[in-house]
Image (cartoon, rainbow, N blue to C red):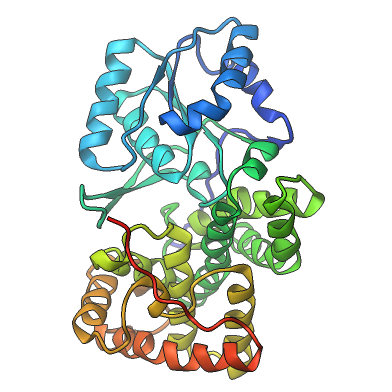
Length: 379
């Protein structure tokens, strides 16, 4: 039986000043929210969140986030939810906070909402969490029977954050179409639990088109903390379009390579989207992309500010042990790389990764783009 399915959050809200409306939307979900945010995030949005909830007649109860969406942190947050008697839990922050809160809200059996303060990943809209070990290695995907009840994004809050967060989100979102296209060709199942719908695949393509047209001017605007139409479009592409597109369109090699990269300590400290972008380059190599398509992707994402070489994620191309570790983890049983429309082995991934640096360096040199700078993990 051929079953196609698409899933999405209950409500998506985006715009300059949207944080002022958080209380009124939460009041539709519950009467006792529990807010989860780290101290840095709370420092710059806490006042507005408190004012919004107070206007809506809701209590303000904020708990801290440790910084890592590990099983231990999820269990700790479940305890916070239970002891507080909350009926809706709200993640305020980035993808790590959001993934931990979604998992905790599901276990606790209450509703959950997300107020991302950056547009760095497509985590806010999905019905899954990526769980990491205490050391920052990919551990598992956790799937939930429903998506968040609310996703609310204040565009000015996103623009106030360092531009590097938006750049990382572009890397995560650009992979959406490449992976959805591969999933559609192979007829593989998606994270939504069925074959991809036309809608999910089309939204993935729309995310790609929006980013190629708007990413560079949006990043320039955010460097000056300005909200422009290009910024609004990129926030939506990074958050909503990519979220719907990856979940109901499908994941493939790019995210599997990302997961493999997390197994090497030298890559720790890089943003999710930075590692995903290298995964996208690797996927294009595995697909045998035309020289023009590969060149265009390397040039564009280098101009955006994303890594296109192993060197830039902390691995030397001649470090065969690390490359093999990445390739082995990327092709583990159950990994999304097996949604590619052809068989991919660890040897294939190792060859693709090893080939990238020399080619990408030449492409960048011919385009007068900066040479790759080695990344050193911060411990």
